[in-house]
Image (cartoon, rainbow, N blue to C red; front, top):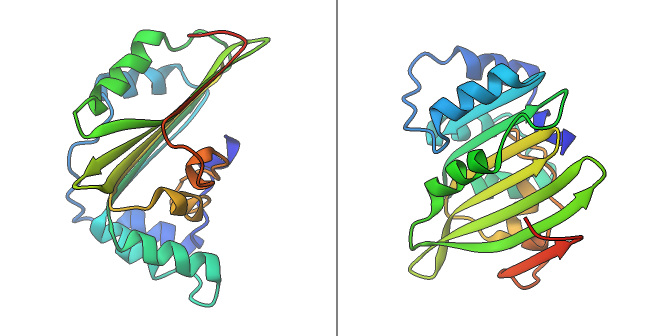
Amino acid sequence: MKALTTLTLPTLALALLTALPALAQGPVPFPPGLAKKLAARASNYTEVTLDKSTLNFASQFMNKNDQNDQQARNIINGLKAIYVRTYEFKDTGEYSTADLDRIRDQFRGSDWVPMVQSRSHSKDGIEISDIYEKIVHGETQGMLILNAEPKELDFVYISGHINPSELGALGGNFGVPQLHTRAGSGQNHNSTHNSGGNQ
């Protein structure tokens, strides 16, 4: 998921975003102690936190004549926040199963249901991809994407109303990766795929 670290906003917009002094960020749904530990171990890491006001501000710099950008603008109108954390490591073993469980524990409420749970094995170890959906009164009010590779850990939390079929439209914007999953293809949301073994 190398695209995760690429923000497609113009350089001026990014400069303005980082200069905004009055951003009142709420609690990040990622264990702060874990974030500090992973950042210290990572060879590269990216942390993106955008609240409602920042999303609205940043959307002004998207191309109004581009269909994909326009779709993304329409989607973020219903969002409250986007949180992205990505960590790249030189070696394997820099995070544990317990670390992943600490992240998942933030999303174990009765409203959260799994959409995709994928496990596969490579020569370096297991690769994990989880997507959870928050359902409130029959509507999606949040999504969690957690991808764990032997040398990389990616976390995306989208807070607010979003149609899972529209998730791909956010890919490449605001630090959200290009997603090629069943979440955006209209296939069965409650699916688990295992290849080569189980976690």
